Length: 170
Image (spheres, one colour):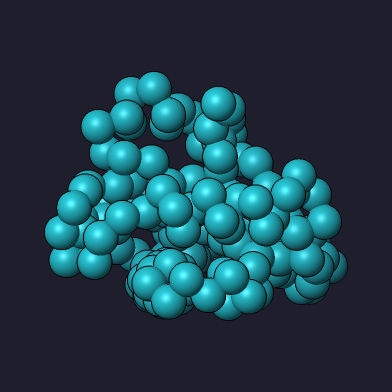
């Protein structure tokens, strides 16, 4: 009887702590809230063409590993056209690691952004919390494409996991 009770408590806890959707309803709302807050910061930096604000969103690890962050920011500011009319989360998923009381939460979010000139898709990898490796906390990946290019410019998230801002090869 005690084993069944412990197992039931374990399974219930695992279900409650799961960060995915259940029946179209978000179980862990904090991650969605973090994703929305991050997108507002990204769009504000783009609107203001604030290079330093954009770079400040990235983790130290991403900035160290990226080829040329300044070039990526310049590319993004030139590529993104128009005033934002609307944006929404298209999909999101997360991964969590816990080790010796320390935690890392990686959030992967796809957004649809519509401006008065174009429709874009954003893909973001954001370590919203990382006490395992504090240099990893912040944005790791930002990929912005025209929505019409989704088939050729988007793929599996693992293939899009690059440090910094995506810039297609010319």
